[in-house]
Image (cartoon, rainbow, N blue to C red; front, side, top):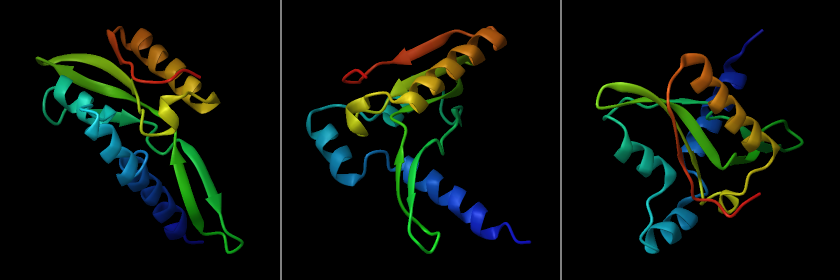
Length: 133
């Protein structure tokens, strides 16, 4: 049994999640003078220290051939990183996906971020930029 197709599906989800709401929505967001959530995380944390959790969470649609035809990431990212060498949990809304409005998966990711901070006894920093949900 080969897992290559499944692994490629996961890698594709990761690539699409990095694109957030897509090039057009990211450009519109930047035209308003705003940084994307990933840019805000990068600006906050020590360079290269962010380790994202749950990047492949989202909704995928598959064609009749079993191939993924679209993927919408959850409009919320979180993970661990460092600020001045000190560990933190950081989480933020991605306005480029559905205006940052949370769905069930997004709310669950928020709970997991808070649980991680509690269990690791780390401060959590929330970067808010959503329309509600």
